[in-house]
Image (cartoon, rainbow, N blue to C red; front, top):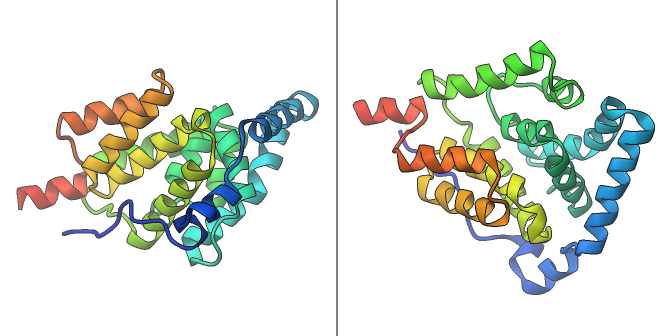
Length: 221
């Protein structure tokens, strides 16, 4: 079985230098977003602030990967980018979003209560199934749209904010069988932040020729 999913040439406004420049966020703007998010967490409490910060842009993200309706807006991409760099639960939610059987409510719960037993079970079971269950095959459309949206995020965000989006992208590229692209994203993430654990793990996984179960089943056949 082959799945034709992966990084591909940017389209629309992202395909031209002028379009990218018009959408690209500068360091000052991103620092302002991060400052506002941190202030919200102090004033509202972490759970409420994280829910408020994540819900609206993630609804755009979820509609995009589920229905293909409208690209995720640059403003929403940058809110998610800031969030992913402040709390890894938001990064994990983006990784899990295209996976079979994971609902929007599951992911909102993960973000607002990442240390709960249900959130830990969701993350561990979903990712473990990828290694063990050959029947769990990527949904090409949902994965491609997730990959496209992460590529857009990385394109317009300042480089210093790229490690976690790159590591999420590396995971999804590994998941769909694009080892070389995954490796490149992991290396880039580690260039930005050499302490990025997800990128380090994926780098080792690809270098040791470890594949998701659905790919291993094809190899055995």
